[in-house]
Image (cartoon, rainbow, N blue to C red; front, side, top):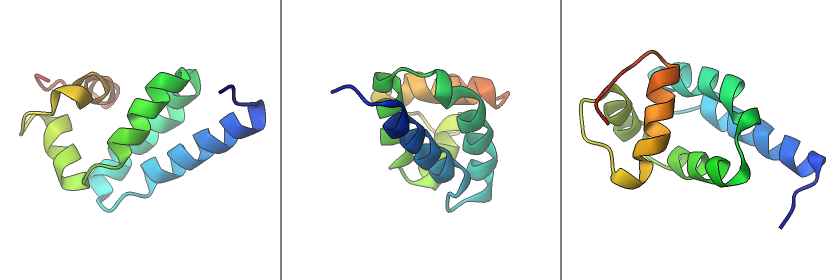
Length: 92
């Protein structure tokens, strides 16, 4: 399915809002800037992976992105991108 520009813009806006309005301020500050700078360049399959990641619990995301807890392998590529963008370099 091909999205027209309006659907794409709406999806990006929704993902940016979900990134900035998390349940945990630390994740707002990690995911918000990432969304603002990275999402518009991502192809649809990568946006799908990011959207899936946003469904995860903030406490888990924080532990994964900081390297305090191992990240599930399926989410590791996206978590690496987020950690790199945030200046975090955990061993994911």
